[in-house]
Length: 133
Image (cartoon, rainbow, N blue to C red; front, side, top):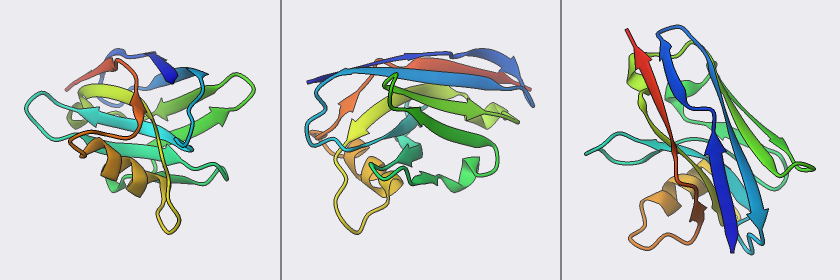
């Protein structure tokens, strides 16, 4: 079992920046990819960015050029640097560890897992990001 704890959320004005961090502990088993997804109440979850076990990162189109995903394996930390934030980025952000299969990018694996009725992966409790106009 793996435990994921997010931090770094908050409230900023449009154009501002936030840095989210996720610290992992425990055995992730077959969950060999990690990333962030977000959800607005009443709407579907959407993958934001993810990284595979080779260090390859993939981003959703709506954050490309603004968000940067990084991993510190020694500290078991996954970080998401969010710049040029927009009001549409307002959501609860979750860190996740999910299984990746061959032929899929990490983001594809993340998006698949977060839409399963019974996900295979592990999620944190989430951290709220609010961007005001």
